[in-house]
Length: 356
Image 1 (tube, rainbow, N blue to C red):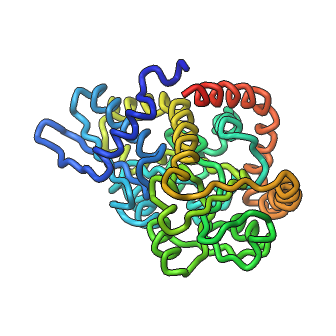
Image 2: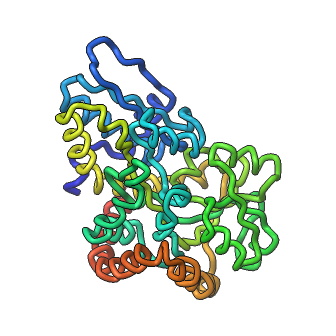
């Protein structure tokens, strides 16, 4: 694959993650500027892509810029890191956009279940020029702009007890993202969606505060959710985009040449990052079982029923909200335009991974 030729494959990112998982290095005297990249996950596409960005920027600026990476909520839980990029104390925050709904409700627009067929479908849609033109302005007044966007995860449920059918969801308490869509989706199937900070999910399951979590295996695997919730049910009900959100306040304090380097090098990582996101997902779908867990797929009948009941939520919750509808409708239209091209890319990627 052309986009991955200058980036490491799975063995390399596993090794890099193990070595750099919690490594933070102080800036030395030779560095005239420093930026911080933060996120709440670890050893996922956020982590790999941040390492690629660090390497590219330090090489291009010949060491003038020091890039420090802080995974696993080292810079604080999500609200604290959001404050950090608004204030300029943190240069980048890699996160799903749904957490920014308090800044602009339209950040929820890609959350509609059943809108996307694959990682590539969401990825091409979110990077379609008309979508990016509107999307990039959603947080501009708050001082945040995405440097690059990718599709990071596909929805799944990790649970203490097996969820083999839609009926098994009834009465369950499941951690979800703090969005109306996530909460409504769980309610549709008789479950309670409870927002909990990501760094607190595993202990919350362990203490039985919740019965499990709806998230993506790309983050649940590296965070060892299988130690407290061994059953993983693949619903494919929604894909989760992530963006490298940049702090305009921090950028303005950097020299123009370094600003240019950041925007240009970041843009180069768009496609390689979705590729590695798919690869890590593929890896963890197998590794989950090796770690003693079980991966469950709904029956064809239940999957059809899931989408029949879930798909209308997009129009009901997102399309009916005047603050969200313009972004939502634009994404819907772009999803139709990119579907065929995305199917080809998805097929090629899966063929490559199946050969490994």
